Image 1 (cartoon, helix red, strand yellow):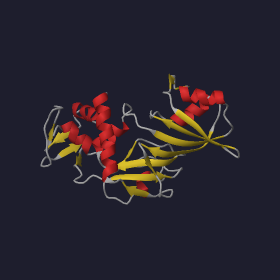
Image 2 (cartoon, one colour; image 1 turned 30 degrees about the vertical axis):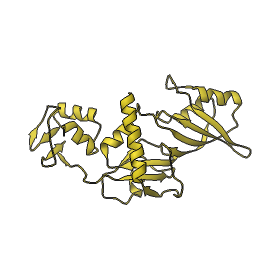
Image 3 (spheres, one colour; image 1 turned 60 degrees about the vertical axis):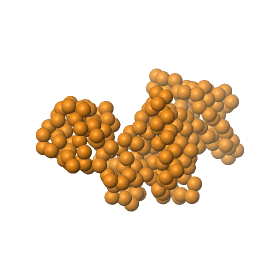
Image 4 (cartoon, one colour; image 1 turned 135 degrees about the horizontal axis):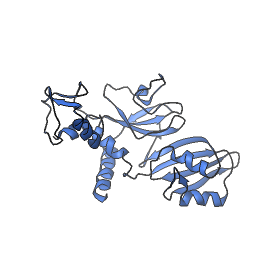
Length: 240
């Protein structure tokens, strides 16, 4: 296996970032610093990144987690706040697939399959993400159409998306289906029409929902679900 792929499958970073680590002299194989990206390695080799031994997990784990709000989507936090990793009973080195911000709840995937995680998290990989959004005021038909056709956030227009009204009585709630994964995208889209998000919940990711899970609970992905996600990734790479 190429060294950069080995590093990625250990969950350290993407292959491209692994190439940077190698070029910077931060990777050694069997005690020798390696600068060639194409170096071949296997499980018998001892590979260190920044002096730390890394190893491939023999078994990959895949989880679907119903993230509560007020939890960090990270493997650790320098302010000692609760992270998504704290909820999962596993000895594997898990990583979240993508992010949900601190105040957003809902579907989040976690795995120790670094290559799979990096592919699924890449901005070029378009997957349906469905959110239920409680807003501080009713939106007009014109405002809803603006969201559907795209609004400018961070100096770039968002892609067209699906928007439907769930409730417009006691509280105004909409359902939004987006394909991008830009930072705090839903919140920024709502702010772009001079409204505010009061509650944000991701109810589906690539067709996977948290049905049957209470907030803070998780389950293993089934083999069928894992294969479906891997097929989606493969098709996305082929079409890119």
